[in-house]
Picture 1 (cartoon, rainbow, N blue to C red):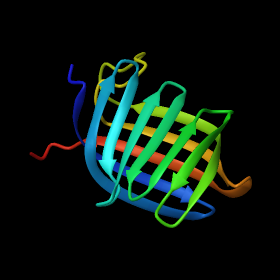
Picture 2 (cartoon, rainbow, N blue to C red):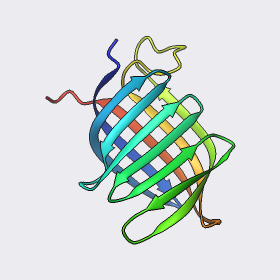
Picture 3 (cartoon, rainbow, N blue to C red):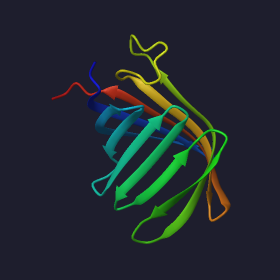
Picture 4 (cartoon, one colour):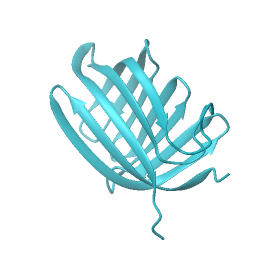
Length: 146
């Protein structure tokens, strides 16, 4: 079983009635009971996504530094820092699901390889004020290019 590989990451975000889609090249790997996805959001900012059953953590580093934590039914504190501003975040996660279609994954906690999709819905609060309601789909597929 291959526990890592190159990936194409497609992120669909719906927020307050607006939809955006971003595509990145990156990598995925499994480690213990977690699935990791790593990619560059821009030349200055890299993102690391860690999924464990029932929990999602996203860390950005570089030009933007942020941490967000998602657990269904819970509120979690986070941070956002850039050269221009710093503020505290709070995510209130409504749902978090992992959908996988790889053969042999039935009954497995984590998929053995892409394709798979992480999907979550949450409310984002900035300085205790609701900033928006978000619905994110992060789709991972294998990148077969050398």
